[in-house]
Image (cartoon, rainbow, N blue to C red):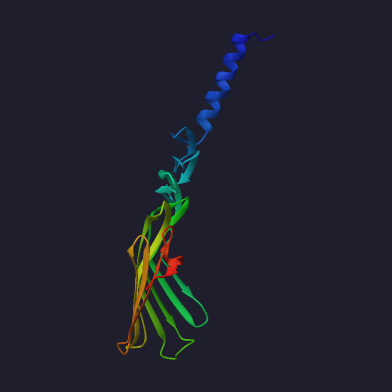
Length: 198
C-alpha cells in the first residue's frame, strides 16, 4: 500500500509530466491562457483574448467610466463584389468599447454601383471613430465625409459629425450648390437617435 508521502510524490510527478507536455501559458489577471492569448479583465471577470486576430481595447461602462478591457476582432481590408456593385474597404481601426460593444470600423470605403448607371455611380467615404459619453451613457460615434457622383459629375458631398457629445449633424451640398443640414440632440446617449433640434 502507498502511504501519504508516496502518493504526494506520484501526484507531483503527474503534474510535472502534464506541465511539460502542455502548451506555454500566460498568467495575468488571475487567468491562465494558451500561447498567443492574453489574459484581461472585462470589468467583471478574467478572460483570454487571441491577440493574433483580436486587439484589447479599453471598455467604458455606463455609470462607471473606464471598466477593464474588451477583446475586439481585427478586420482585414476587403473587396466585396456583388452582381452590379463593387466595394473596397480599407484601414480597419479599433478605438475602444462602449458597455462591452467594440467601437471601430473601416476608415476608407469606395463603392462603384452599375445598377443605377452604366457609367457607374460611385461613393467615396472617409470615416473616424471615437467612444463618447453623453448624460452618463457611453456610445460609439462615427463621423465621416462622403462624396458621390457618376463618372466626373459630382452629385453631392456630405459631412456627418458630432458638434458636441449631445449634438449630431448632417450637412450636405448637392452638385448644383444647394445646401441642406439637419441636427439631432439628446441629453443622454447617442444624439444621432435623439430629437430634431435645428
